[in-house]
Image (cartoon, rainbow, N blue to C red):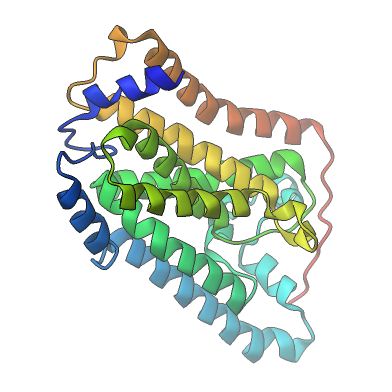
Length: 283
């Protein structure tokens, strides 16, 4: 499998969109990697601003309205669109698949996600080199995380951008596999750090005190980001001929099948189960 993946590097050279091919010069590779994180990537920056603005809006509503009426922060989160299976199934509030990605539970939660998005988002947006595709990667990863979360547990309330952010790591994995041979040692080390971050976040729910971490959202977000990155890379590389490589063909359609099957499976499972509205908030 490793040989097949590395062989795709021949097809990814000079790609105008999708994940960028590796640079021929190690020095040039280092210069771009070192400088890119400090350049403003508009989509990443825009998402960060939205998350921060919404959180301060949450604070304003909580201290000016909700707290004065004796309501909790959870009540505020549910009112604004936190994720909960009962609300989605029983009240047809499908907007929660999206709104929950922009809500946060605390300043620490917001800070952690913002810092992760800063390091991951700026670099991935640079590598993809297409603002629309980067936004799709982020958005699809977040949705995939919510679908798997709903599939696993229909009762829990959850919120946050971590599923979408970890989905960006899926792009890192594909880029790393395609371009490992031509990467500089410094960039390999940097990617190793990113993979350590991915491992910690994917399995953080297994640690002590991790019961409040939505692991299903993390895993779903990563799988969604991985699948979309595979599709993006194999479909958009200019020199890539998908019919000439049976392994790539299976990988391509397998990724499409995953992104289609996940929401369908979720809808079917939730449809046949009784899901209570476990949290009723009175504003």
